[in-house]
Length: 198
Image 1: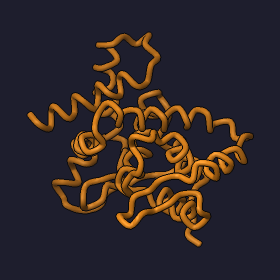
Image 2: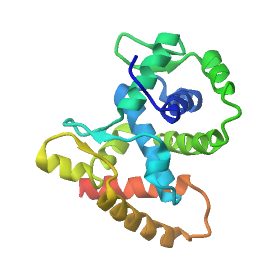
Image 3: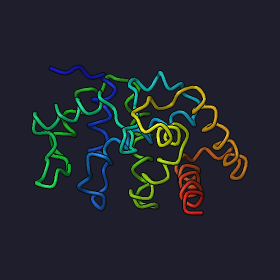
């Protein structure tokens, strides 16, 4: 069996548990995209990328991919926790997903990860998932990949520094005392969409 990290397994469940009805079903790309966005939001909160528990690469097609997350998704499918339709789109088996998450009630970090995953999904209620993907593709790391046309590890040190600088500008605009995670995330993504289109 392919290995996966416990944190990627939690996230594969949380994405399905928090997925709004209006976004169902989601594609393979969106599954990885929402996980990656959750990681970026954790970074914006001051958490080290290494604490996320698994890493991402940017594929030659220009989207984030995590082998650990994919292995977790594959396991959920085998267990019948998620359904995959004829178009390869994912939707949850709600009762089984919720019950599986309850098995990890003792894991202290799950509520925090749930908040981050939920916020990443809520971004897609304000900005279409296609636009989010477009915005993410224009962030540090992805831009380099487009230049060299090969898979590359995401969220390296230089990428993180640039992301922090961007987020710092937004924090100054809305006020650092604002603890809401969704508003700055939507502003950051929207600014990236406009920059890409401009």
